[in-house]
Length: 75
Image (tube, rainbow, N blue to C red; front, side, top):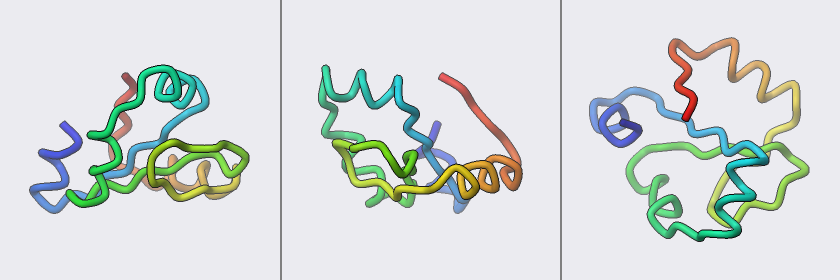
């Protein structure tokens, strides 16, 4: 779904939350490292260490991102 939206020019951001990052550390996924190549922006909390390329945002920036988006999907 992320790649489909990005392919059609939708600004697409994937927020990697702490539980998601914990799973990534246990089961690395190289496909996530390639999302930026397809126009998907990955973001994490600024105090998190991320195993894939991602922008570290402070709590206010993440809240702003959440309030400005048109759609939120939770997996």
